[in-house]
View 1 (cartoon, rainbow, N blue to C red):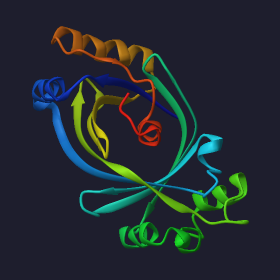
View 2: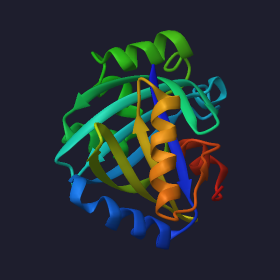
View 3: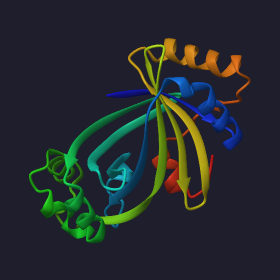
View 4: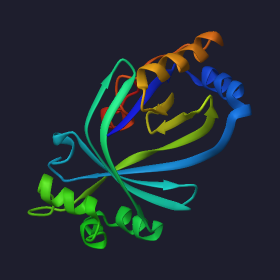
Length: 203
C-alpha cells in the first residue's frame, strides 16, 4: 500500500516560489513520461485499476506499474501499487504496439495479475490510452522526500507537492506549516493524476 500526502498548488507562480524555497534541499530532477493501457471496454479502469509504463529521463529507465483501489481524503492518498523494471526498448515497443504488451512481458507478475484478476487477454488485448509528462523535483527536507510536480496534460498544466509517508497526518501538518509560513496557497488534492487525465480537465 502506497500512502502519500498530496497538496495541490494553484499556479506556476506558487510552484516556482516553493521550488526556490526548497532549492537548498534539492537532490534530483526527473523527467517522466507516463503512458497508460486498458482494454477497449475499460476492464481495468472500471475496476479502479491503472496499468502504466513510466519512462524516465529520455528512456534512461522504465517502470511498469499497476495501481488499484485508490482512495483520497483530506490530501492523503492510499493505493495498492506494484512496480517492476522494464527494458525501455521493450517499453517503447509496447507503446507502439499495445497488443504486444501481454506477450512481450508475459513473465511479468503484473501482467499475470492483470490477466488473472481482471480477465485481460481472454477475449481482447490492451490498447494505449495516451498519457502525460511530469517534471518532478525531489527534495530531502527534514527527513522527508518531497516531490514537487509540474504535470503537463494536453489540456493544461497542474502543480502538486507529494510526499510518500508512513505517518501521513503528522507529515501533512509539517508540509502545511512550510507552505503557510511562506505564504504559499494550496488545497488538498481530490483526484490522482490518472483520474485527472481521464477526466480531460484540470481540477
